[in-house]
Image (cartoon, rainbow over all chains, first blue to last red; front, side, top):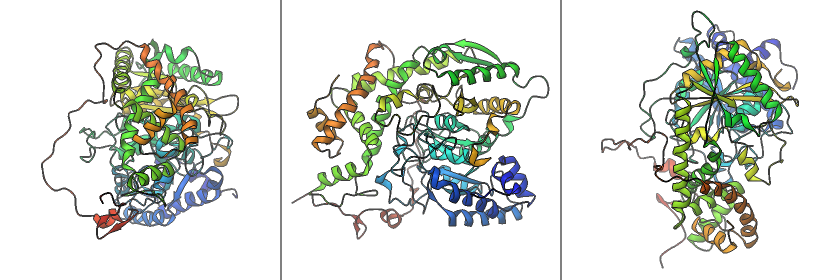
Amino acid sequence: MPPASTAAHTMINASLVELRRALDARQISSVELATLFLNRIAALDPQLNAFITVDRDGALAAARVADARIAAGEGGPLTGIPLAHKDLFCTEGVLTTCASRMLSNFVSPYDAHVVSLLKEAGAVSLGKTNMDEFAMGSSNESSFYGPTKNPWDITRVPGGSSGGSAAAVAARLAPIATGSDTGGSVRQPAAFCGITGIKPTYGLVSRYGMVAFASSLDQGGAFGASAEDCALLLGAMTGFDARDSTSLERPAEDYAAALAAPAAGKPLEGLRIGLPREFFAEGMADGVRAAVEAALAQYRALGASTVEVSLPNAKLAIPAYYVIAPAECSSNLSRFDGVRYGHRAAEYTDLADMYGRSRAEGFGEEVKRRILIGTYVLSHGYYDAYYLQAQRLRRLIAEDFKAALTQCDVIAGPTTPGTAWTLGAMADDPVQMYLSDIYTIAVNLAGLPGISHPCGFDAAGLPVGLQLVGDYFAEGRLLATTHHFQQATDWHQRRPECAR
Amino acid sequence: MSLSNEQVGHIARLARIALTDAGIEATRAKLDDIFALIEQMQAVGTTGVAPMSHPQELATRLRDDVVTETDRRDAFQKVAPQTEAGLYLVPKVIE
């Protein structure tokens, strides 16, 4: 694309606070801002494939409404701010595919709760981002629409499953984006793409209208360049929703306000950071270890202390997850029968044949594998050995975190063992890919909040992410801790070539 | 643990996923790898540990028994593969 003008370049890389100021001061209109990002998508997305659907008309219409609200003095923090939604959030009148052939014709008749909250806040949806099919994957390669490319190196994966959202924010095709995290699907792509991503406590963000994968693990989350941007987005996504039976009734929290620095002293004075010895023992790439160690030194310089803690059952998280998640997935995805919505086979002999063929044609290989695993572990005679055993391990894992969090305020470690791998490198080896989620999956099993923020680069120039995990409802603390780190460092301001 | 092709065929039938013989064979190899990973669970003693089904372990919330939804049948049936007179059409199941 032609070089952007200085003003345009400033807007593309601006924080939400700066965009808010520019919109309120009428330095730019919401329509102009949306157009700027839509044009970037048109120029750059053919290479990156971060979007499945670009909703130009819808975005411009929403931007016009936002401009009117701003002019009337009725805007809020997100009014007129462009964003992108992961394509598993239902959007009324807009294609919602979950990156599956099964839903490739599904124009949702209703909005997800998260989508309607952000619409009410005046945010402008640019479109729907690419992902692993039904959020099952760690590389975006299981998408029916082809993989998203990592903006830092387009021969590499962006991570997954929310890889399109992470790549879009990293390439500045959108300032912020929504995602979902069942086993690391916000934090891992945030790490691979060099941005910030938060998965809140289970139950904080309504799952209504978020296509279900594993219901006891699925949780909506937020992507931004910084903790500050994530705080503003997450703040608008949370809140009780009676339509989600696991939605928690809690008073709203002002995450943006939680970022304010203490009046005196070092900003993280008194913060105890726990370092699980199991996470630092082995299996971590050298470049990741170096960046994480340097970030921990920075945290200590900001006043935090570090203490060794232990999560002895963490290594069981992956096997337990690959029973629980497929079990719930096999149950959730039984709704796709070719009758009420989604793909129906063109040819069949009877009803059973129609189900079998519609599902065989509609689902990709990884989704089918997980449905089959789930069907097996829930079948007669195997339930105790697999599903119940996995749920018992889940409790042991959750209790490990509980014990560790009595010795520290937050737990820190690498988000991932390595940086973004080359497209296709693990395509034929699902187990190897599953193992790459070793540091994130346990957090979902426990239902705790986690954030990943950029903390450096490896020798190949690929971003490294650091994960912080807090106690239940510690989102404000995780965001503030990350924010203070980002006030003292500039990793979160580094941009891939296409956004410089 | 190693699955037989018959077992994979049986699971696929339970899951209502039509697999060809070649598909069953390819799937079986991958599932064996995944179950080898899962089997690590069996080495751990969990006697006396209560299963954790859910992170928050809340009781299901109750609400008043009142109508909360409006009739949006037309909108919802617009995305259905085949409908007629407000009904979803499927192949005949009763002779």
